[in-house]
Amino acid sequence: MKLAVAIIHGIGKQPDSRDLEGQHLFAQSLILGLRQRLGDDAKQVAFQTLYWASVLDKREEAFLARLAHEPVTWRWLRRAVTLFLGDAAGYRKVSEAYDTTYQEVHQCVRNGLSALRAQVDPQTPLLVVAHSLGGHIFSNYAWDQQKLNATPSCPLDPFLALETLAGIITFGCNIPLFTFAYDPVQPIRFPGHCLTEPMRQQARWLNLYAPADPLGYPLRPVPGYTELVHEDRAMAVGPWYLRHTPLSHLAYWHDPRFHHYVAQEIRRLLSAQTAEET
View 1 (spheres, rainbow, N blue to C red):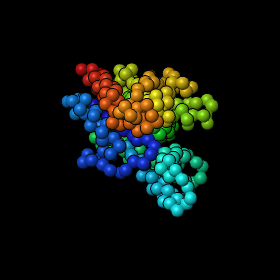
View 2: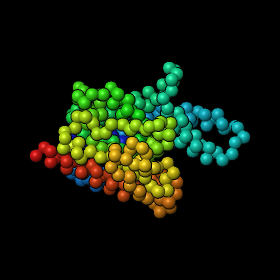
View 3: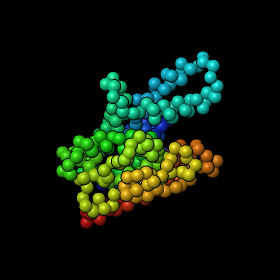
């Protein structure tokens, strides 16, 4: 395999349902669309979903069940708020030793990356495709990992250390909402230390957001991200009856234009890898 692609989901309820390859339901449509567009090039790509919803879904559903007999209205909206904001509020690093949610979510990310590593060698370039809160989660995970890799030397397994990180595609990303607590804002280090110089020159962080998506934001206006993020791309996603509504936040996964956008970047990284080998 010439390229590894990790796909992480964002807020909202995500069923732990997988296909025969072990890919979770949330990304199956995207992976299928990418393979169709890549053709034979897809054989050079290892895909892996990073699933973390199980950490918080049971707690949120249990709370909603306890509300069943309470005199509250707009239950459908309350459910949406609980499942969406509950993820964002529940995933945070706190000082109490008994609260391990942050570490549990990151362990899920680590497990997915380890499954991906089993398909590739330790020097394989990595592209991370992250939706919504998943972009913030991966950023935090990378930040913690980079504290362990403070020097530019390569660790024993550069892939698992994220030192072969060659690309990030965030979409429907709300990282800006989590930066207001920091002054100055300091983003993660990108790209990885252990890429070859030609591949480092090709590394890009691309950010895509639907104009009607209230949870998707451009990243370059955030201090510290202007030089790090190569592109903020506004793109309406979803069918005509969704693309101009807030529900566009969930429409990226099935949108052919978004599939094309990601496939183009995968093909560009594959071409760079092939050129390097010749």
